[in-house]
Amino acid sequence: MKVRIVSTKFGRVILDSNDVETKYQHDVVILADGSVQKRPKHLSKEKYGTSHIVSMEEIEYVLQVPTQRLMIGTGMFNRVTLSEEAELLLEKNDVEVTMVPTNRMASEWNTLDKASAIIHTTC
Image 1 (cartoon, rainbow, N blue to C red):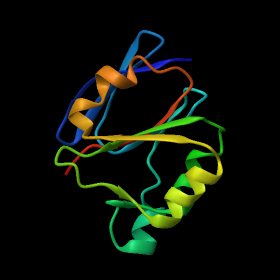
Image 2 (cartoon, one colour; image 1 turned 180 degrees about the horizontal axis):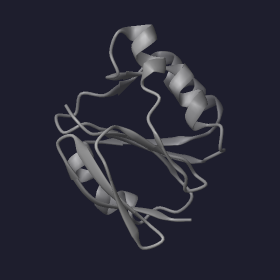
Image 3 (cartoon, rainbow, N blue to C red; image 1 turned 180 degrees about the vertical axis):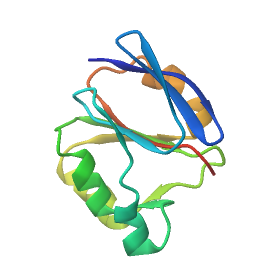
Image 4 (cartoon, rainbow, N blue to C red; image 1 turned 30 degrees about the horizontal axis):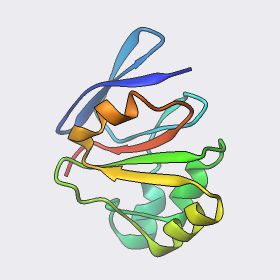
């Protein structure tokens, strides 16, 4: 199932799945199987005190559905980064990572097939 990004705005993202648009007013994760879930940012917040650093534990959550590509929407002001451990885990699993400000990720995301995403909707 393909999930398209319809639009992003500070604090929200609208996704289209099977011609059904849904507005999310929180960060989301799109897994490679097309499922959309609330981002488990507590996994990163517990470790780093912020959801602006993506932890290895959060990446393990995303990799519960194997993927070869991960796109990370880094927020409207490009604040999200990967922890060193998260980078190493992605490299170990041969996952290609693209990081782009959330408000500019739709055009590239909508061309991808069987990829995963972490979308930070605020800063």
